[in-house]
Image (cartoon, rainbow, N blue to C red; front, side, top):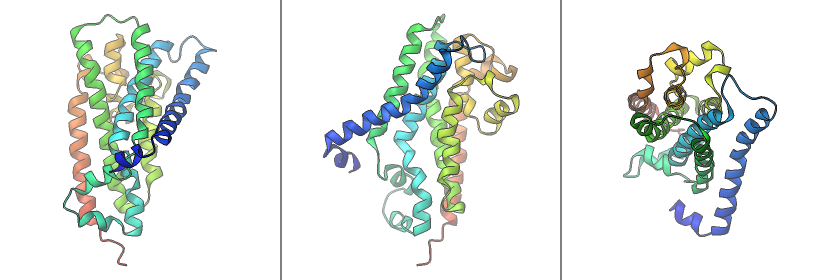
Length: 254
C-alpha cells in the first residue's frame, strides 16, 4: 500500500530518493576531505576506508529499508495506536516494519553500494574463493545484525515508551562508527562493539580478512567467518526481547 502511495507521486519519489542519496553521501565527502589532508587514517588508505564505508552503509541501508520504521513504535505505545495493530490478523512486527514504508531509502542503499563498487575497483586485493564468498555474506549478515538492533531498540520502547533517539544512537550511530577503521578508536570501545553489541561483525572483522590485515583486538582469523552465526544469534535474542516487550504492553487505558 505504501509503495503504491509513493508511486502515485513519482516526481516526489525521485526527488526524495536523490535527496536521500546526496544527504547520506555527505558522510563520504567528509572522509574525502580528511584524506585531502592526510595519506592514511589509522593506518588505512582511502580505498580501504571506502571499503569499510561501503560495507557499513549498504548493510545498514538494507536493514533501514526493510525495518527502519520500527523507530515509530514508541509513539504508538505512548498514544495507544498500537492497539490497532494488535487486533489485525497479521504479526505486529511485520506491520510495524511496513508502517509508512519509505521506498526513498533506496537512496542510502545505492549510495553505499556505489562507494563499495568504487572501493572494489581501486583496492589491491588478492581475491580468493573464500574472499569472494565473504562479500555477499558480509552484506546479508550485516543487514541481519542491524535488523536485530532495530528490533531490540523497538522492544526497549515498550518500557521507555518513546526512546527513538536512544535507538538511533545504536543504529545510525553504529553505522557511522563502522565507516572508520577500528584502529582510530580506543580498545575498550572496540571490545564493546565486538563482545557486547557485536557491530564489529558487520564489517571490521570480515573486512580485515579480505584486506589482509590483522583482526581487531588480536582475534584469530577464523572470527572473520562468524558474521552469519552472530546475525542469527542477534536476531534470536532481539526476537525474544520483542516478544517479552509485546507481552508487557498494557495500552494507555484510554
